[in-house]
Length: 78
Image (tube, one colour):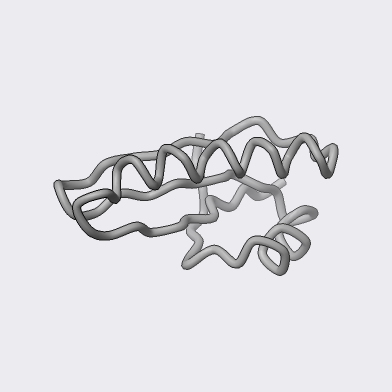
């Protein structure tokens, strides 16, 4: 099954901390909704840009996209 990485972008001097905190909310959402998802994370790209992400399958993508409104998505390869 195809995997999709849903991405939330954060910009500004607090981007890294915000992305790290956002990942906690993504994990909470997974637990509350009892989704079979395991891959979340955050990345700091530079001093002013960081991202949080969640990897979903096609089956979960619509539900998660509509509920959490990611900024973008891309295909995820192991």
